[in-house]
Length: 316
Image (tube, one colour):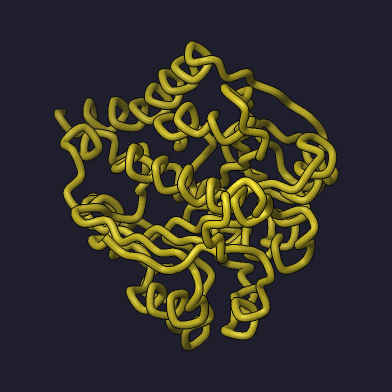
């Protein structure tokens, strides 16, 4: 009887959380928009710049997530310039590519490129978590003229040893039972707050939807990122990693750090796979500092003779 009552309540908790975060974003000054981009009905939030900054920022969420994941970070970035948070195809309030129930990495890349070209209109700082970081790299490789820089939060998509490296992850996100749900929450958040455990069934339902299951089933190794892809990046890169992140393969961090040796990097203790939710102040401060370095590098005359090299690597 208790289980029969708990399951629907847990499933309903996630839409409730999303509804509250949607209203919170609107109260903080965001506006909600829909527009057809790359053949997809796309939804995004926008916040105007507050101050003199004019570098646009585009926020990309990870798999089974949505734009509201940036609710705590988005208002803190408006000193950089206008800020946009996009629901990737098939997630949040965005639709699917025609005739499909999921989107490939190539289709997500095309959506982001269209967002920058048709909505933002100038080179943009892209910030991506997990799958969003994977897409950010793909956009920067294909169209560097659209990208001022990228900030990768626990990015996914590393080739590692091929699909076999990802099989444990792919099996885990099937979430076959409550025990696995609790395991995933610990992998994602390290020490998740108790309310997240209550929403476990809601999380399970999200990971079982077509945009996740069909994406995983159709995943092609050729879409994964190789060392030569990272070395070919010609835009400034920064990375944020949670030290307690066990959601994606642990080798991913070594893969990205080894192949992006000049990236600026921060490691956050007591943080899992979702730094934007767990440590929003530190994440926002790091992004703002990276944006200042980008501005200094593009305007050396404003630095009064001080060195303005490409942002370098650091750790905390």
